[in-house]
Image (cartoon, rainbow, N blue to C red; front, side, top):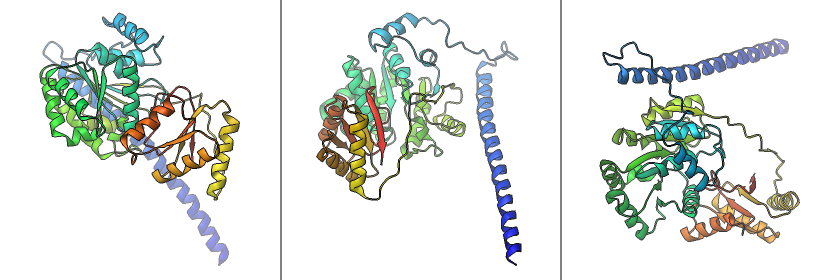
Length: 386
């Protein structure tokens, strides 16, 4: 009896493995079909726009985005003399040329690959105001601080914006008063602020909306790991402003997610630029975590002291806001210069913590995942997840 049960158990295990293999093959096939469907849909759309009596049967021309363009000299000047970047990284020049040509663009590029330049440089070259949609307040603040330091007129319109800055921004986008080149907003501003959308329409109608950039674009898709409901409404931007180039950027998007967000953003004819997501300079290590909180903090403090004796900057990620405060306090008591950052903090206190860490006055900032993603800090050495 026992032998019969064991035999059946083994047979079931074998059959389950076969079924799992079949499911994997079908999912792989499904992903390839979705990708091909998107490509064919884009070709059909291209065909519709180009098929006139004189173009029937003509093939769709493929643009050489690495070729010569009339703005090359000006773009090189801004890249070098404004941003201080000696050479383009992989695909940056091609993406910039596509955006400058008025095309919609989807960018898949690893974190640290230089996505920001792909819309910031065209924003400077094109006339008018560029709209940038970004999900994280810390990232928006970091971008605005960095651009302001380069004398680029950039502002953010969020819940933390002062009334004075808000009045300036609305006058700038509605009437063109004041100097404004890049405006950062959260997706909630697009989906929930009728006042903002009304002003943006006036900006567009007067010919002063230069481009639209959607950062962390994978959030548009329910298949994306950071799905955020208000991102679903960003498709309205291409519907209301169909002739404005839209660039969607992310470091994390499977082919299925790419297809999903292209449909949601209404950019079927977008040009895709997919760079390698491999980061050969990164090193990953996983360590056993003690069940005793005190021991965990002792080990983190010891790791920081031994591995980074020259006070190199780092981030410690926690699951909760309360835990981030506790861990920062515990590290501070152990001689580590540490502060914390989370969404429940006072706006000024949060900005101060950000600035102190950016200026190397704090060695470690302890936070939830609301901080750190995309922050421009080249000397940031390590993240620790606990």
